[in-house]
Image 1: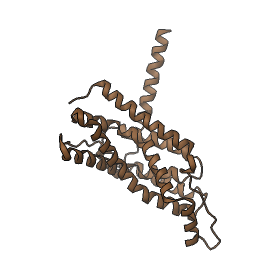
Image 2 (image 1 turned 45 degrees about the horizontal axis):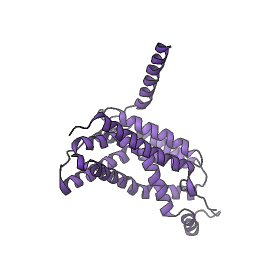
Image 3 (image 1 turned 90 degrees about the horizontal axis):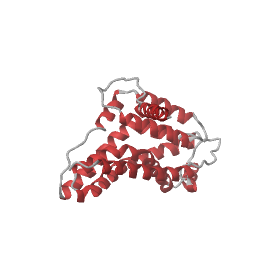
Image 4 (image 1 turned 180 degrees about the vertical axis):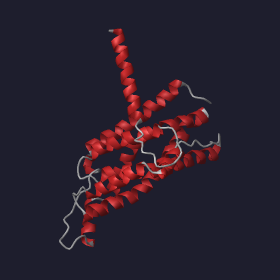
Length: 255
């Protein structure tokens, strides 16, 4: 059931195009869904009234829509390899459905995590509106987490490719559970990086792009023994530099 290079290429292009579509929505930010609106906090500090006003200005539904769009834009490119794996291990008639179940399971994990993330975002914006202090604190945590053995273990487990049943409801269950487990390990590796841009009073679009680059790059690295590895995992950057050099050599060769 090995898929052809053409199909694997088509999977990559399709996922990247869909991701780009969600990026366009994020960057245009219709209705301000990616911006937490602030309310006035009295000298007595945050109160129940100010929390209610904050939630009226930032409905949970809007926060979750923005979060889901961000997850789809940033995370879909990371799913190219597992989706190709599903196509390799599935009959032709089941490939698309199994891949869709995988993506749904994966996204569901991030959506559940989004409720907790948005609660943190709203709470910190209520306590410290328009402040860079929360982002700075989470940024420090993210840097420490980036080199931790727990993150490395999550990255390693993110490379696990489970056996998939070929037929029926068991095949559906396997694909969906594959997505859930992949999402769990992805959340474990990237929760701090995902939270950081959302806490910035400004510049969160640029921060999301940088975080996406980091998360895709570290996903491309080979598994390694968990430990305190002070490595920035910039394989994507190394690939881009190598490809640019190769293209420059080819251009100079023909000239």
